Length: 307
Image (cartoon, rainbow, N blue to C red; front, side, top):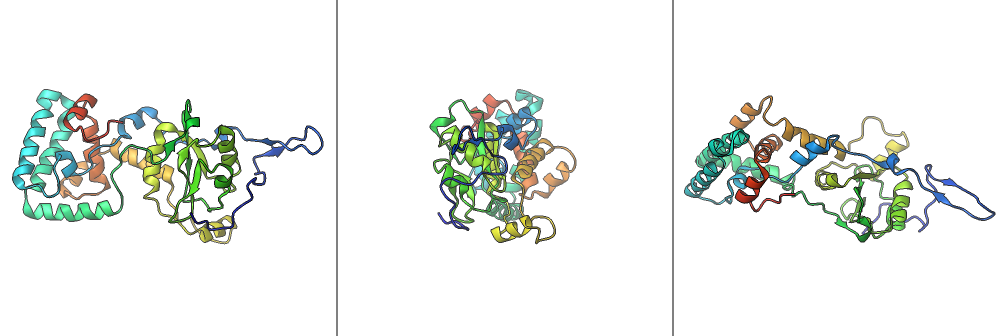
């Protein structure tokens, strides 16, 4: 992996959060900060995250369980099977919104003109991001046992100095495209090494996050806009005015949940009439699907992870 600045020594200098304790002559002890100082969360309500921060169908094809090449007859057959399985008369009020979306999906995908427009919008939307799988990109190391926190790097604000990689290489690495730090294995090193890496980050962009949030944060991180390291350093030095051009992954994760939560409020009806595949329609589809009982979702859509 490449780095955008020269490697630091294997033992980094003390950060402004570390201090020396000289018990006797020549002895130097690194005292790490309280973990809470570096803890951050994107979603304040864990119950909201549990309900809405899950993988879900987010386009008409995924909802109907048919491929983009499905014929009109196949689309209609898929619709009839699903409408029967999740009809509000059988499931209850929780299925009302989903039936509305299913009706719109079959009407869109069985109309040649509407389907072409939808397919074009879907292709453009998919170019900007993949489907949320609910699975973390980073693996979990042996030292993660019993941990309720994960470790996450805000790559948008990272300067690629590689201190964390030098201190805890079994946990951190540099991603190839931008040369920014990234966690590849949660707690791949001993806790003390990971904590030292977090504490000595010169720009303080490594965080402890709730374990249940890391998959969503890693997902939105892939969609964040990044500035060059040169521009970040200019801003840190006070030599560049204006706001940073970076996205904030914590804000993007919170927005992802908020869109799902408010999907059927405000202008949802207008959005549905547009039949345009974008983040708003994805949130409407996902929230309607997530409102179903979990056992029903697992039985009717077995291909969707129930994490």
